[in-house]
Image (cartoon, rainbow, N blue to C red; front, side, top):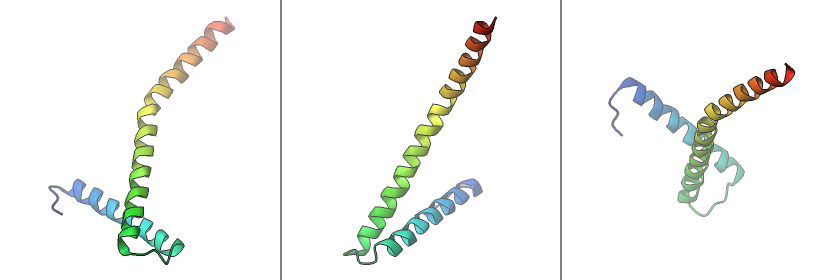
Length: 80
């Protein structure tokens, strides 16, 4: 894999470390899977699920902040 800058290299290395950690967990938990491909597929799917979940949480955060601010303003109006 070729990277174009230092930041991208760090991201790729971090991602590779994450996949390797998942692989190690899966090897420990399921030592008798039929082939190597199962381990890689399970690790990749697990990392992808975590990425999608993180993206969903990140995209909801600004909306939740606005809602909290609005709720605070409504509470202030009600107290008056």
